[in-house]
Length: 121
Image 1 (cartoon, one colour):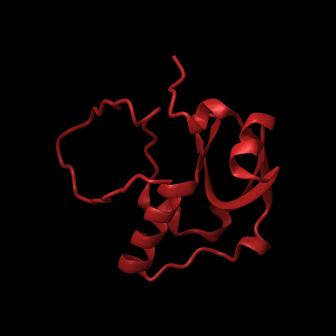
Image 2 (spheres, helix red, strand yellow):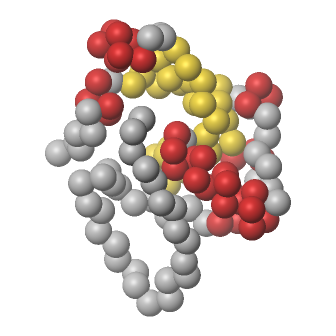
Image 3 (cartoon, rainbow, N blue to C red):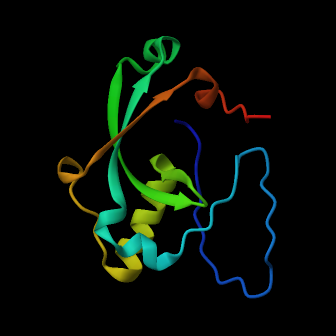
């Protein structure tokens, strides 16, 4: 992963509508208070599709994640976004997420299109 991410935080008072760009698949509004409850965390078990296995050198990997129910659909906050949010919660609220080995497992398969940065159209 050779990208550099510069996380920023702010307080937006009036703007209600945000438009994603090529880097963002969709926007999910998660209340800050939701992130401070250990029961909303899980272990995201990713099974890599065969073409991804060749690139990453493994079949399965576990990642910490936050599971959020957004209008009947489960959203998973994981990877770089999870690490940024976790660092913010630790710094500002002294909140530490539960240990990965103690979390319930949710599973998915990661396809090659994800690594290529291609958005679903």
